[in-house]
Length: 265
Image (cartoon, rainbow, N blue to C red; front, side, top):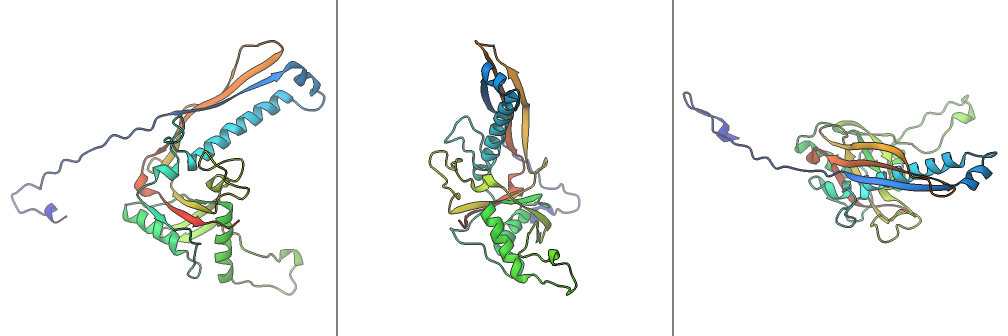
C-alpha cells in the first residue's frame, strides 16, 4: 500500500494483475422411468400412475442435486460436480467436533466465520445453512436469553414453549437461518458416497455461510430439467428426465463454512 504514494511529477508504480482461469464443467443428472400398460390401466380409476412415476423421478433428481450441492465430490464420483464441502477453502474453521457455544444471544463460531468473510471483502450473506440438529441447538442457545411477557387474561392458546430462530443478528446484519436435510443427510443418503450416514445422520456436520448471486454462488443450467420420450417397446411407456447443471462458486472468498460441529442425535 505504501508504494501507491508517488511524488509530484512522477508516475504511479506499475502493477500488472495476474488472472487465473477457473472452469466449472457442466454435469448431467437424470433418471429413466418405465411403466407398463397394464399398470397404467389398472390404476386409472384410482390414480394417474404415469403422473405419479414422473413426479417420483423428478423428486429423485431434485434430491440428488440438493445432496450434491453440499456433499458432491468429483474425486470420488467423477461424473458429479463438487459441492460446498469441497469448493469452500478460504474461510473454513474446524470446530473439532465441539458443540456450538453462545455468549448471550451471539454464537462466537458464527461471528468468526462472518469476520473472515468480511476481511476478504464480503459485504453480505443471504443465508446460513445448517442441519436440522444444529438448527435445534441454535434455538436452544437463544431460548435462555429470551424474555417472555404473559398476560393473565391472555388466551391459553397464545402460550408457546421454546424458540424458533429464523434469523441470526450478525455484525453484517440479520442473516436467515435455514435448516436443510441434506447438510447432514440421514439414510438413505450416504454423505461420503460409500458408507451410511445412519438413521440420524453423522455425529458432526457443517454450517455453510452463503450468498447466492453473481458474486457468490449459483446453480447454472445449460439445459433445464425436462422430459424426453423414449421409443415404445412392447406395452410400456418409457421416458427419461434430465438436466445439465453445475454449482458455480464465483466469489469463493465471500462465502465460508464451519466444519465438524457436534450434531445431536
